[in-house]
Image 1 (cartoon, rainbow, N blue to C red):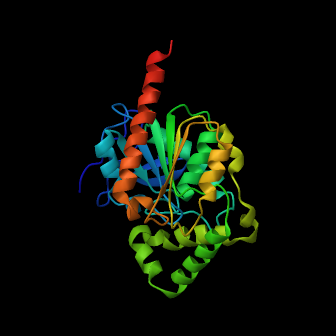
Image 2 (image 1 turned 90 degrees about the vertical axis):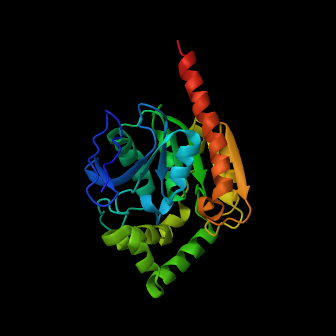
Image 3 (image 1 turned 135 degrees about the vertical axis):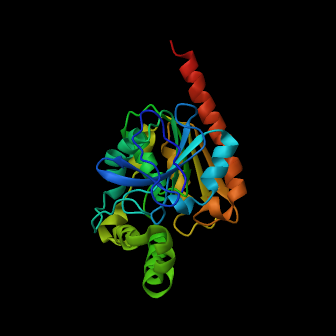
Length: 287
């Protein structure tokens, strides 16, 4: 058992108590996390927001590699209902991504002592990062790196989520997910799956938030993404008033950091260096 790296003087994180996991309290929830690299008072922090079936562990070693290449810290956590974090009641409300962005992400950053952050969101996590950057006045956030983002629902997404439901019910998918989510496995899966398959969710759309984002944004999507098309990237570019970079990766499906880890790493390293450098220059030039 190792001690957790403390997140910074402003944080309220506990010490690791189980294996190599630490926990903090935020907005009344116990949140599983791990910390990689420098503390928030020494460097910017990459905040990893996982996908709808993800958790801290399912980022694998990508946060470690990205932190090592950029010199940033990495705060990798499991939202409530995922991993070993606090469970949430089902069904999740169809507003669950808005709720996470508006009521829980900020307190989680506060509890971790985050001072400057670049949000790295995957799928649902990318949507949450988008909403958060648009609706909050959080000047800690210096940029968004959005992997396989969703800004509206698509037929291909619904079809793939139906296939995931069948796999969860008939294959070993539940067992495989339980290795990472433990007792939260049904909460994680059904909270995500039933929301996206709800007929009312077919009209889910967050494009109205795009023009309100003021920080640089990187969009990365796999050419063969089974949950979305290039229309997602096009919608963001069309609505954006901030600097935007888009990359479409050959040989990748919905998880570029798994399917094309080195290419994804290099793209993010360049973007993070520019975004954090520009933010620091703005601080230095301020009166």
